[in-house]
Length: 184
Image (cartoon, one colour):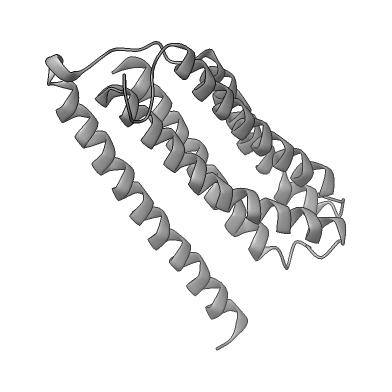
C-alpha cells in the first residue's frame, strides 16, 4: 500500500471514530432531554464557573492549532505552538476537575446518597468527554516530542494533522455539551 493511500485510510478511520463518538454523545443528550422531562426526579444545579474557564481554554487551544500548517510552510519550528496546546489541554482537564469539586460542594454527586439524575448526567457527560480528551492529550504528547525533534515538515505531518482534527472535534463537542448543560 502506498503512503498516500495509507494516509487516506488513517484519516477515514479517524472520521469513523468521530462519528461513533458523536453518536454516543447524541444518545446521551437525547436521554438527558427525556429524563429532564421527569420534573419529579430532576434537581437543577448551577453549572460550575470552572466549566466556563475550561471552555475558553479549549477554544484557545484549538485556535492555536490553526497556525501549525502556516508555521510549517514558513519552515519554522512548531514546538512552541504544539507545547502550548498540550499545556492548555492539561489546564482544561484541571479546571474540569475543579468544576467537579465545585459540584460536590453544591451537593451534586455522581451516585450514592443525595445523588440526582441531573447530576449523574452532568458527571457522565463531562467525564466521558474528559476520557476522550485523554486520547487527544496522548496525541499531543507524541506530537510535542516529534515537533521538538523537528520530525514534522510541510510534506510530513499526518500524525499532527490527525491529532489536530481530533482536538478540534473535542473542542466542538465540548462547546455543544457546555451550551446544552448551561442553557437547556
